[in-house]
Figure 1 (cartoon, one colour):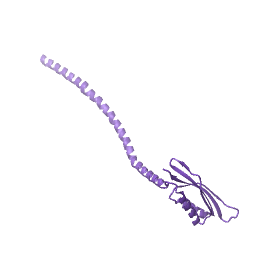
Figure 2 (tube, rainbow, N blue to C red):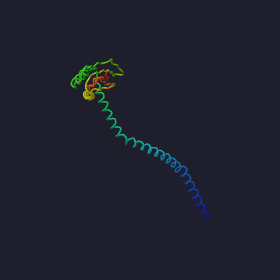
Figure 3 (tube, rainbow, N blue to C red):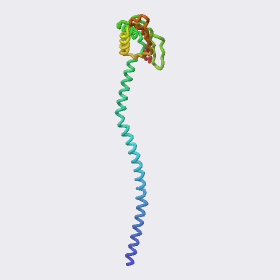
Figure 4 (tube, rainbow, N blue to C red):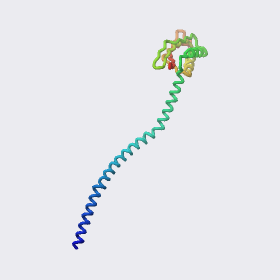
Length: 177
């Protein structure tokens, strides 16, 4: 029986040594590696969720970019390269005449330039009925070129004949580069 007990003790010691070796050389390093991988996986899941959130907004952003590019294109098209303000002044005068306005005055002012964009103020004065003047402003709004209306003044005299004198300052722009 002693031999059996001795074999059992040796086997038990061998099992304990193998179990200890397994724990220290296999289980603990792999467990530590598993924890690191779990943390990395959690970080990747968080990053993926953030990327999914950004991806869901991407079509909307692309649509906004498309709209902004269209607006920029339209804006650039409405600001001519080069002065060409003589044509504009003639067009305004002919519209005013067509609308039956009287005592016409269309006069450009001193232009200013900043960063490739020049501004020419244009002073306008005419006399006519309110309907004619509003028709003129609607026509001004339909121009291909951008026109900024800076000031408008409507005055009447003591005759009360339904006519008003309109004075306005509008700005037109052109690109210099």
